[in-house]
Length: 109
Length: 121
Image (cartoon, rainbow over all chains, first blue to last red; front, side, top):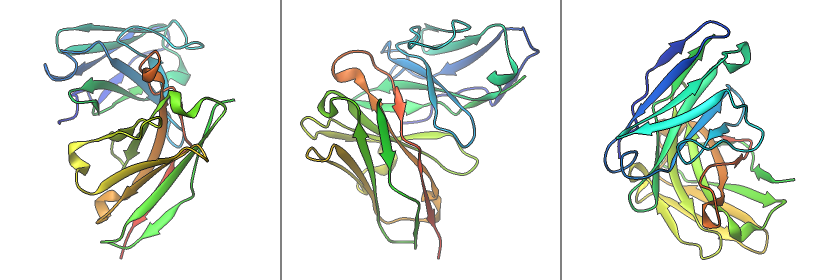
């Protein structure tokens, strides 16, 4: 059960859009529409941004959006803001009621 | 309001076991899965396992098979995670998180505050 692959870092200027990829296999991302994304500021608990590929929990800004194609899921942050600077993780349901996280991406604004 | 309150920091020696708790409140305990996730220093999030509080069924990550046990106490709405044969590699912050997939959406929507476990001789 290997971690999903994410770029180590992504950067952008305020107001720009960035996209973070999350590549898995046919045993996880490719087989289930159960990909979620989490924002993690150091020292705090992670926060859910996207669930089931493209749905947003109540209260999450519509600047965050998700999609999936084949074995790769993506998180797009539009209108980048200083407070978006954090670590981002994807997570996918895998076989046999198990889950796997991505390697994590540090976003710099 | 929904709360997951975790037990306090632990310091353990290599080879020992640690048992962490996660006390739920503000929602129907049996309607949500509980996951355990950890983050070692400088590393990413790692999924450890999941428990269904209603029936007590569990599933564990491959990296932890054979040395992790998750249990629950329905009378106190508390989930426990015990990890044995600790090594320095188990030094991490451990989180519990709630998942409503049993009755609806699938996501880790509420997280505990985290528990630091330090393993050192």
